Amino acid sequence: MVIPVFNEERDLEPSVRRLHTHLCETFPYSFRITIADNASTDSTPQIAARLADELPEAQWLRLAEKGRGRALRTAWSLSPAPILAYMDVDLSTELTALLPLVAPLLSGHSDIAIGTRLAPGSRVVRGPKREITSRCYNALLRSVLAVGFSDAQCGFKAVRRDVAERLLPLIKDSEWFFDTELLVIAERAGLRIHEVPVDWVDDPDTRVDILATALADLRGIARISGALARGTLPPTRALRDGAAVPGGLTAQLLRFTAVGAVGTLVYLLLYTMLRPMVGSQAANALALLICAMSNTAVNRRLAFGLLNRGGVLRHGCGGLFVLLICLAITSGSLAVLHHAMPSAGQAAELAVLLTAGLAATLLRFLLSRARVFRI
Image 1 (cartoon, rainbow, N blue to C red):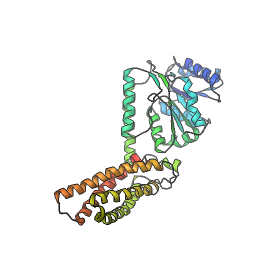
Image 2: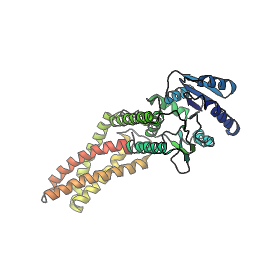
Image 3: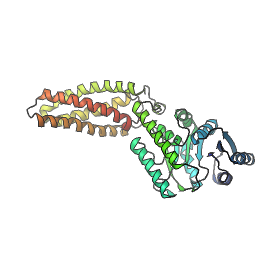
């Protein structure tokens, strides 16, 4: 359990002693408390050193530079413990949540566990400014990065050491955005994130500069969004799903285009065969449905390198959602053609569908990466 601190001479000793007592009396597993001092300039280092001397399960780590992410990366990298965790020094999170936090990691049920203040069952006491800021930030993450976890910045998390060894080298941020980047990469890798509703009481004497932290988080979101758009976010899904050819954006686009080219030919052939029997719109829908379902399965394996069966149903449902968007594009194109040229023949329809299909293919690629397969 890492406690990152910066100039916490008032809270450090009572909090560490309270945590130590709780673990000794109620926790059924062995533990170690690591105080990670982020270049404090007050008496925090002296207090940390004394606690490390007095408490057998405590140790002290001094860093020359500030940064919560830097402290966690350093302390976790040095630890031999099978479960690595951290919590804020103010102990805003009720300590009874510790065992539910680590239990699914010890059992192998989950890879990462996080406390959440935004789930049903959580009880939170904090001012309106921090409440609004937190909810807006997590809503922004869900809308921009399409994340599934509910609370990125609750200072109460744990991760299996074997998972941390794979993830830590991929995280660039060393400050407050560290938590978010860890979770985004883990989720994109298909790792299992367990959420624990917590009772949480705000510390009014926090050392956190809310404005500076919010701006840094926005820069982090912009950086991750850019990496996703360029295909440069670390392809950690290969570690989880056994991907043989994850590649980057260019390689994925080339494979997706090749699959799409074959699929387009099959789609046009099916349309030509079905049109005399069911009409243009129904033929378009049926041909697109057949090709979209097969393309999703083929692209899952060839374009994005996902070889095992994990997430097949979710990916199939996502592929159907993308299908509806593509159907709207192609059907809309046919409707516009028939409205502008009521006497248009099959050759004109095929030309319009080919053009609309190319646009739909590009859109499918972008949506498949970002929303369906979350690469």
